Length: 209
Image 1: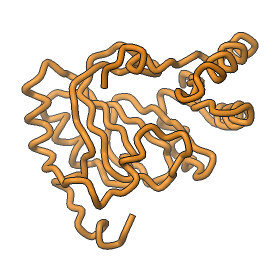
Image 2: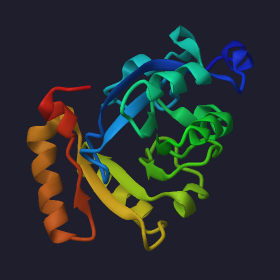
Image 3: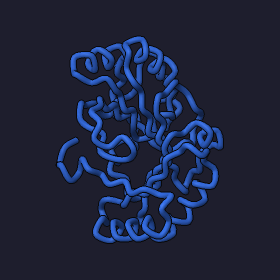
């Protein structure tokens, strides 16, 4: 992210790649209707990323938070899922404050590598090996979700699982582009390590956003 881009940020606006009303397609809250806000900007560049268009934050439009909340209120949604990219490149204190004033439930999907902000009802931590999460996130998360692209990712999953609290739900998610291989890997691993659960990207099977 460029310095010029950072300087443009203010508490009333966030850069948004897309926003839409759909269902949560993965993890603990699979199947729940929610309004999704996908932020622009990410500094991880995962090779299997399915949202590479988020990597260049300067191409994304700054949207007033109030406009986003107004659009949510025009749907039947009672929940917002904030995802990316990496949302917590930005400060979400004001966003969460405004959303909660409107009675909305807030869910966050983050890699945990940046400073924590916002007040969330549910936090899904999806840590990446190239930029480890800050330790604070392991005390706040509700759900740990590890993407499995290759065999070594199971080692990373176990390393992260050692840091979570007792009430955290553990998920392994097969990487989509290699699903014929990763799906089998994950199923066998969970059968042998039943503290883990399988997360499948249901929205991709249903062919919805």
